[in-house]
Amino acid sequence: MKQNKQDDMQQIIDNIEDKKDCVLALSFLTNKLCKSKYFIMLVDYITKNKNSFSLETQFFLYQQILLLKFKYDYAYSDDYQQKIDLLLYDILENYRKKFQQYDHQISKNQIRKDFIIVVTDQFLGRGHAPTSLAMQWCDELVKNGKRVLLINTAENCTPIGIIPFGEGVGIGNYISEYTECDTMNVGSRRVPFFQCDQIMPNDNVLEMLLSLVEKERPEMIISLGDIIFSDLANRMVPVYTVALGYAMPRTFTKYRMLIGKKKYESDNLFLEHFGFSANSVIETDFTFSIPEQNEIHTREEFNISDSTFCLMIIGNRLESDLTVEFLEALNELLKDQRLFALFVGDFDFESIISSYENLPGRSKHIKYTSDLLSVIELGDLYINPKRLGGGTSAIYALKKGKPVITVDYGDVAFNVGEEFCVQDYAEMQKQVIRYLEDSPFYKKMSEQAIKKAKQLTEQDMALYKQVVEIERREDLNHLASL
Image 1 (cartoon, rainbow, N blue to C red):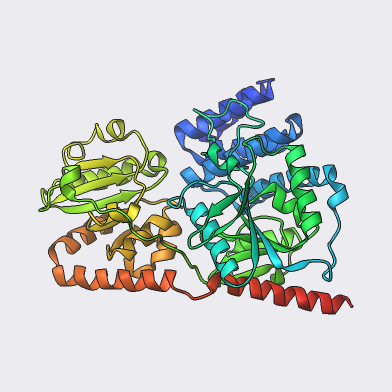
Image 2: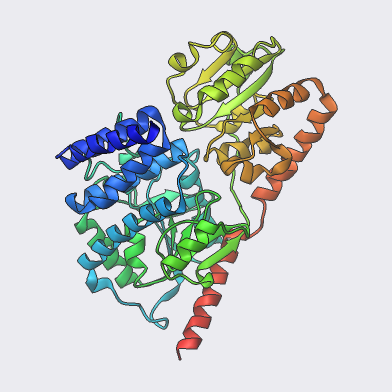
């Protein structure tokens, strides 16, 4: 019967003549029903019919697929991951054909060894993890004698190539005022800065950026994410793609980061399929920079009683992270009058919690904060819904000595380690009560949290060591070519 329903749905899709209407129908079902089968049908349809869409729309659809994949963590096989990888590869190949004049390597004796370009596809504030990481890279490079140019290509989920999609299109946030800045504060110093208009991918802008690389001849480019400009520039100078989570970046640049030493089978398949050797992978420990706390708040400001044990749930995508399963577990916990929940993040708080008995009266919502550490200071325990993201805010919690409880899955679990992990939400509930009632245990884990945060944030020169390793490999490649 299930197979018949699937066949019926496939027949309905096949009978929709307009390709855009078909994408809209499948993406709506994927968003609304959150089922892997519709996501798989959507990926299938887009990859099979990609040539019916402009190159800009193909890139738009690729980014929307990544957004759905990140938000809902659909289960699918390596074959489907490879289809997504091939979609990006084909998009990049078409852009390479447009810019064949830049398809040449700048010789080693022409590059400027003291100059590195750092590229991100979105630049917001320090509370935004990729922005903070871009700043950290710039700061570390300058400290070690490199000249740096920071570029925001603004390629992250841009409105260019947009077509109707799902219940609403995911467009990346963008601070237009930064286009007026020619330098940017990255911590203890300012560096030259350039931000593209939010019209990417745009041929004229790509031409300008590639011409800049050809003229200025940087030693390498540090790229945060799958960025079209970075891939095109990779033909001229080595590009190193930095991981924005625990997963190895699936990009086509010369080098890519692997956090830790664990490659997954899908990573090996990716490297093998696209002809990358083990030499293209830079293994490194995770490192993160946490800004100084600049504000002080009290529980009284937010009507949180000093007598309650406050559970914190923090994220940029709580709308999708807060599943029914997680909220039911939390609602059950909040029957205990000693507990209180604090949600931090921009989402429709009232409508999501209204159907639960205990959440409305025993929780608080802070939509936005410019100083996350000051808000985390108000809580007692960071609890993490099952999701891929959230790794940054969890490290902030550790830094403030707040223990974390997370299901053993995703960025948070990877960052905080197994001592803060549980198997499921039932175990999470039991662990919350243990933290509440066992003061010596709480004190011990609080101390462990601070120790773990120190380990993650105070690895001297961890970023620059990656640059040194790439330089070493480039020197060996050069010697081998002589």
